[in-house]
Image (tube, rainbow, N blue to C red; front, side, top):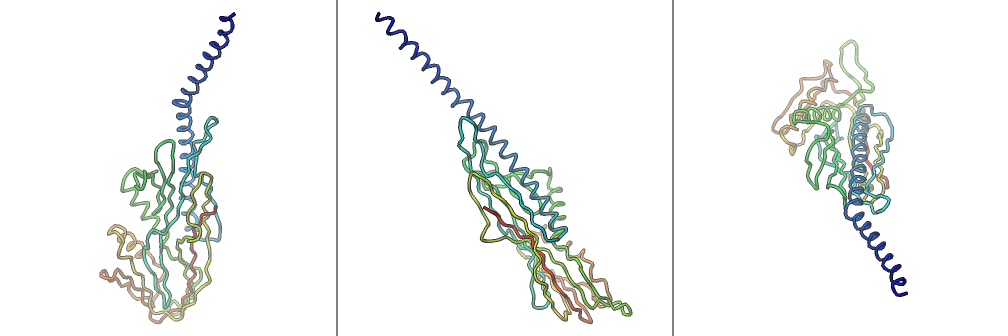
Length: 296
């Protein structure tokens, strides 16, 4: 009778040992592997979102038309059926640097760059984040940019940066009035690009989703009459390479090819370009900033 009473207890203990062993193996090997795979898929989605952001920024600056684009980014991941705990992430936009300053009469327009950063928190794989700036997407490790995402050498990086600076610094014409008899420019409307951020909505940190809004705005036109010179200052804190890129970008602007435009002057000590007009011209300036904002 005693042996018959002990047998079910022994069987239960053996089954319990098997279950505990199975759960231990599950927690030690299988679940971490699943969470790493889920985290890898999450970072893949973040990478695709940053590539979408890059193409949307280039398109927005190119066309300058009023529009708003929203890109959804998963901030956390790594959750699986047996372990729903998710990592989280920090998504930040900020002003990076000023390329230069355009002075027309009493008005000054600053050509600024913005950057976008995603940094993982409590990641179940490697501490890999993403950074967008200067027209390229970079992979980061902690606080450091480790490598480019889609380019392979420094020459490609310089070309992409040059193309993006040219795009941002491009000054286009919407309307102009020319005196046909004297071939002199009398009135002109200039369209100026810029990048700026909404300081009230510049970051989000969670394990859910963040939404980046890219909005093309059209500021109220500024009329400045009459103007005898236009000045463009290159930011003295830029690297020598960046100064060369900005300098060449501005030299390529050939919108004032008329008799009343004098030869372009350049002062290397002040990093200053000067357009002069005789007789002066009437200028209307329309600034079309691309506004970065994070929607929570």
